[in-house]
Amino acid sequence: MDELIMAAKHARTKAYAPYSHFNVGAAVRGASGKIYTGSNIENASYGLTNCAERTAIFKAISDGERVLDTIALVADSKDPVAPCGACRQVMVEFGISTIIMANTSGKTHMVSMAELLPWGFEKTDLPGEDKNNE
Image (cartoon, rainbow, N blue to C red; front, side):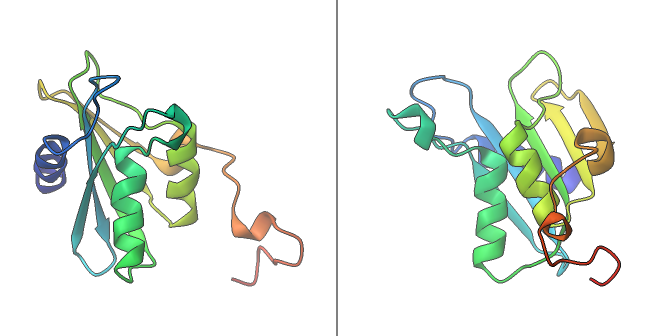
């Protein structure tokens, strides 16, 4: 847990957030044990902004990881920072089971994916996919 939080804190220093000034860092661990980091990357066209969590996840996937287990995110917020809905859905896609939310003051809160997004949309929800035959 501490290793992921420290990696997320470091990733936060690389955020590109000239509009919101809300720097977020994330670190995700792949099934291989390797840790991938990401920071939020804003854009003047706000809809094109990418969250730290998705940046870290996409880096892991682009490096060949297909199963991820735990992600940590850190921001300078009053309470531990929670992922947005889009990030939650991406976490479901890649099997992340544990989410560690933290702030720069050292407060943390750990939840399961089932707690964070109890009815996530999964590939087995698509037509032709069998929930019992994965």
